[in-house]
Every structure is written in C-alpha cells, then in structure tokens.
Amino acid sequence: MDCKGLSLTPKTFQWIWPATASSPFQVVCHGVGASARTMISWRTVPTLNFSRSWQDYKNGFGSFTSNDFNHWLGLEKVHLLTNNRAYQLRFSLAIQNNTQYFGVYPNFVVSSEAIGYAFSLSTPPDYPLLDCLSPLEGAPFSTYDNDNDGETSVNCAQRHGGGFWFKGPECSTICNVFGQLLQPVDDSRSGIPDEVFWSMRHVAVDLAPKKILIYLLNI
Image (tube, rainbow, N blue to C red; front, side, top):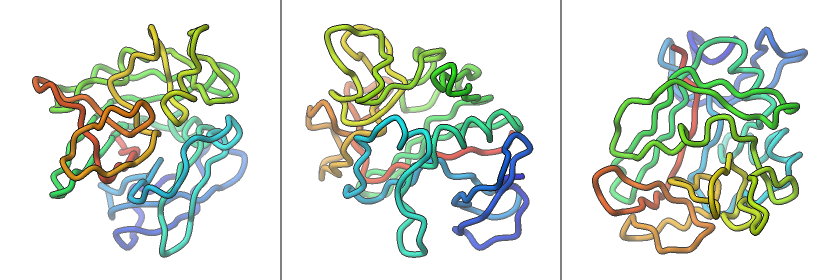
C-alpha cells in the first residue's frame, strides 16, 4: 500500500503499510487518485538542517504537521517502498518565478542498510537537468559520521552539507539536493560547496532552486 489510488485531499498525511514492512509508517501524499505521489522529501524553507547523522538519514527527520511538510522520509522507509513495487523517482526543482525543472529516474530501487542503501535504476530520459544519479548507481549512501564515498582526502557529506550517494574524485557531483537551501534571487549557484544545486544540460549554469520536492510515482 502507498499513496496511489487513495481518495485524498491534494496534500495530506497518510499511514501506509507496504508488504515489505513489519509495521505501518506515516508519509506525505501529494495529489489524488492514480497520480498521487508518495513524498520522500519536501523542502520549501531553508531552516531544516540536512547536515545529519546516519541514524537521522536512516530513520527520517523533519516535520509532520499540518502547517509544515518539510521533511526527509528516511532511507529505511524508501528501501521498504521501492522493494515492494515498481516506482519512478522524481525530483522537482522550482526557481523564483515558479518554473519547475524535473529529474526523472525509472525503476528506482534502494538496497538494504547492509549494502549501504545503494540504489539501482533504469536509464533516465533527457531533461533540462543533467543526469545526476546514473553515475552514482551502486554507491553507498554517505553522511558526515559514516563516510562511504571512497575518497581518503575529504568527507564529501561534510563538504557538501548533507548526506548523499557520493562517488568520484574530489566528490565530483552534478547535483547536491541535501545541502543548504539558499534561495538566491537569480536562480543560479553562488559557488558555495554546501548549497543546493543541480547542473543544467546544454547550459553552463548550476541551478539553485527555492524549493525541491522528491517523490515516488507508481509505474
């Protein structure tokens, strides 16, 4: 069970119980019917700190109140959901004029904690945002207190201000979705290593959004 097919208001909290889970847990459902999205992360304010421990990223953190949806669901719950049925992972980034940019990843599956919550996915379609996740497939998740990035000279999660699937020389990454949400006026990156950004395709610009949503959509 997830958010799909539930008769809900456009944005609400819901208890779900995937077949892979030993007990139900609460998620934010966004949308109604077959198009309802099971939210993984909701970021619209810069006050929620994403520089968190492994346990926080495993279990989830943030707010589940009617006035504040800003949260991270938790790697363990994402693992249970994506091993229960087929999902498409989507990133939605909104800039100051509310234009949205999407990153779309079919057949997204997160492994267990024993494998570091590494993920697999299918080849994504071309979008204005560069493909950030495919080069990181198979990499374990990293946090400042559980450094799995393979780099001996730097802690990538510490440098970028949040956990992620880091891999490659000197933490090279096309996106940083769990850094600081700085919300710059001109929508472009200021060059701070730990800010939220995503590199664009065909344009030499790193997009810095005011809002970022991450969710699962049934295939």
